[in-house]
Image (cartoon, rainbow, N blue to C red; front, side):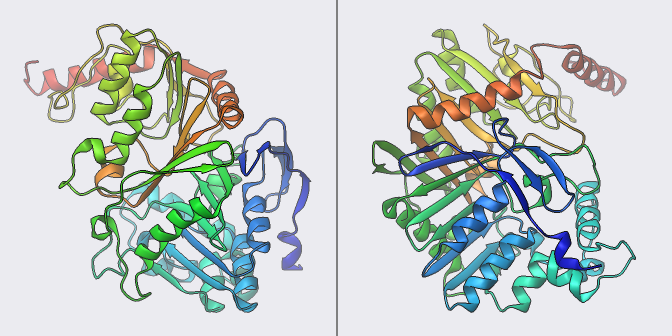
Length: 449
């Protein structure tokens, strides 16, 4: 076996709409297709890994990466090539994922989710499936091993002398302090191409935005430098200096950027979720949103006002979280669910006039809805790494950008419409059954409600 052949990329087509200095990509774009390099599957979508590699290949002076999880070897190899060419290459990770597969025996796996991720990593690196990790496999498939072997500097969120921030949840890259890549996708098989152990998987639905603007790159570079610190002691979580939203012009496009978390010293209106609510408040006709998690009550309260004003709301949330007791989708549907303590969520507010176009998409086995975007009036896009939750707002290192550009917004509208065509909406049997089941449990525990 010649290992490099396994990694050979056969690119069929990458076609993404470019609007001036802003280009959007979707790994399930029905108008584009490519042959995925690891499972040799030809499928629809933009190859996000290849887009990232192409941008790294164009770098002249520096590449700064901040991403929660990094497992894609072609991106690692592109960074290594630039490091060897003398460029300033640095990587910031979430500490939970700052390990090579060779260290997997030292990882304490205490939940099913992390165990499944480790199984995926092992299957990905152990190409010949002989139960051992050969040097060629490590140098061809284990991104963290590759980066370390080449001497690419890596730090994580324990480098502030803590056990780590909430999550170092960023997914951005700054190139030459001129080009910024912002995504909802981690650099992993599951977020980009699809799970190794699920043949039907085609990758969690995600988007990637490439913006050519020194003004925008300046703000992302500032965030990266805060994280990096001196390379031995960084600044994560609320140890970073607070910066409110910054707005710039990129040609005819207006972009606003803000980073989480925000210390409790500041009001909610000054947070990233507060920025989301401010833009939702401007909605006049419609809001379409695809989210991994949606649990911020104050955002929900703002949307209820918009609903009462006649704004059409279309919302999809990942199936794992859509009908949890804390999900704001329940409020939208006019429903409520008891929690494990047989009480309702604090400050819960069920909508008097429920929205009906809210629910969950049906996706291939192994895939989850990983988007974090909203489209307002088909003119403005909210996207980034930030989930609409208190943890993202108050604890995690996160990115949010707001892009006011009609053509870009239309690409996200198309993505939402694609997802909605195979979705379960409204107060359906599943959610009503889950509510009833929780009520039964609480009755069995002699709770009154």
